[in-house]
Length: 220
Image (cartoon, rainbow, N blue to C red):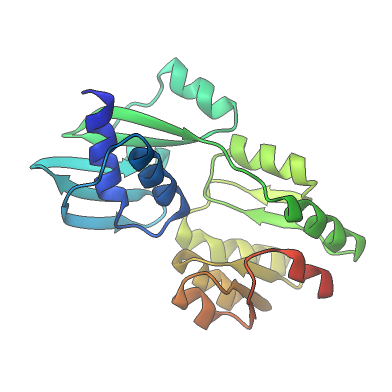
């Protein structure tokens, strides 16, 4: 399958998602002159990816969790190499065959370094909770100087991680912006939502940050 076809199928499924990775892939496709087409039977698979029928072909777009679930082998050395580099790898399966792979890397916002530093100066431990791979989480945590992290966390497990920290004796403030963050925001001692996030996250939080940046943490 040629690259443009893979891009078209992937962008067509991902255009229905609000996830930041989905938006990045759709933007990537459009920059290469590939526009999404109509999709039927679209559905999201929480924490794993999305599915839809594009031009009468079944298309799955998702994480290693999804590949494991649908029985796709991703042990290819090139794929493993990308994962070891700390890339977030997204897989595209068309009619039950692996058709393409996207490798994305996180761009850490400049203000994140200062925000984490300020929190640590205040004696606050900083933990990261992410669905990304161990390699990605480790890389980002190291760059930011984060105390610890939880990687490969599925949406329904986020609240469990908050409870784990609470059972360790911590008072937990949880920051999130997505639908998947809502249960953890409710479970935390203080739930903090990003104002630009989803309505569900905002309604679940105790505090809403009007700005998207993390500089607000300096005033906590």
